[in-house]
Image (cartoon, rainbow, N blue to C red; front, top):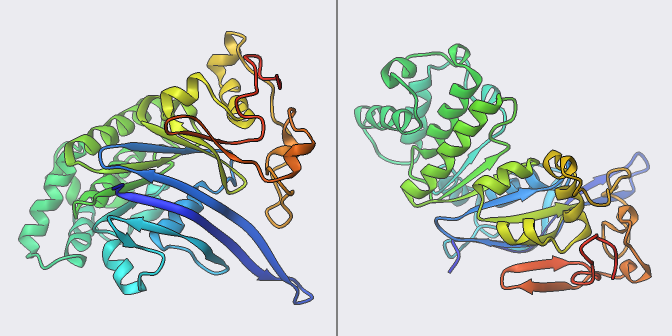
Length: 332
């Protein structure tokens, strides 16, 4: 059984306009994926695709007007979508941990680093302050922070960006979570520090026997650090499967365009057809395939909902033309 299973998850933003007419933005539509212990799943897509909203929906961190309107999220056999807020709050921070993309805004500027880690540990269990303090120092050491004693006494403003991100990861690990969700964990960090943080995350998954989701717009991160990938567009997963399979033989035109747009592919002349145009209007999504208004390969059939096609075991594509695109990316 998968540690995390998301089935048919749909999240809408439900508001009223100035005339008090109901407006619905379909931010997530029928999202499906599963994640096993010891595996790393990358979720990629352009800005506004629904990547962070997926994480917030899983963790129960939605705020009005966002609302889950369909589907279910199951973690270790427990259905999160029907769980009470108190029960979900106990689970979140202990079994499920979230590393956000802006470490400086996530750390309390009025508390020393060590005190913040101790507070997290004591919030989810009956621990003495001495035991929590030792745990905090152990976790700071585990994430590669030199002189844990000294850093524990530091204030957040005294940390570099990379060091602050490591502190956030240590904070997420304080209660031995089984699922770690990292939302753009290297945003704003230089290339060297990015690689260090991602190496650290990957090693921690293996060392502590966790599962991890990495939310990113960087295909290089997915290619080097993830086992599986889910490609999102307009709140829908249009393609998912093993990283090696999808990067070598993408089945959806949107995935092909993303991979073809990477600098490495452009330099060697392997870039495919580009998908331009404006971001989709979630209040007025087109019928059928959500990509069709920006897809060079769309035909009349794309106005109807695309089928879910299994290309190879574990590799699923939502596209009418999946399997019919030749090596150049045109419809065969």
